[in-house]
Image 1 (cartoon, one colour):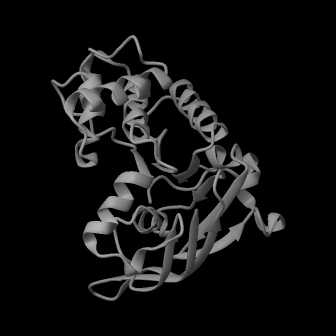
Image 2: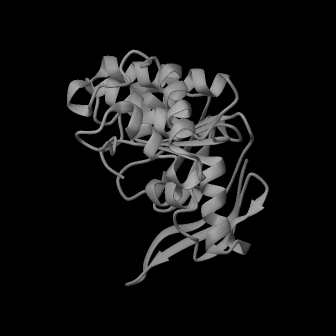
Length: 240
């Protein structure tokens, strides 16, 4: 599903956010990319989500060489293959849950009725089939995050990227969101969770630890150097 080779990303002023990252994620995996503020994990999210092109190196998503795709085809790949879940929900106030999710399908070229049908199915899948007509202010934090997950799922993506999906939630709501992500992964969706929280990472089957723009350990290949596997090691600093 994901293949990165020697990927770098530099920003103006000589800021090097990624320093030569290689990473493979197979279809159907559930992976945590974990690291403290400034480790490069948010840049990784943007590269994996094709929201940003690397400065050098190659990125393959679902067999497509992202660097060779023109912008229109890159947007089409993103719309058809990749779903996003963000920490801040990004829900439109004054808009019911059904239409918040349906609006996320605007770029799929579907008619309103078809978008709403898919949105209703996605909300039912995350346990909110009874809250279709509720606006964001009428939902709890955990329910708002579930709406955000439904938005990411409505397009039936093969790859779901979750950016700090529990960061704005209490522990009970956060546990519920992580259980939902595991359930979605169990149904076949490849899920990559970007997090600063080692306890969250420790609960996932694979952990990729980043620092200073580099992959420092990967539990799939080097479990002996995987501190995130031990919750007693504490939590990394909040941030990216």
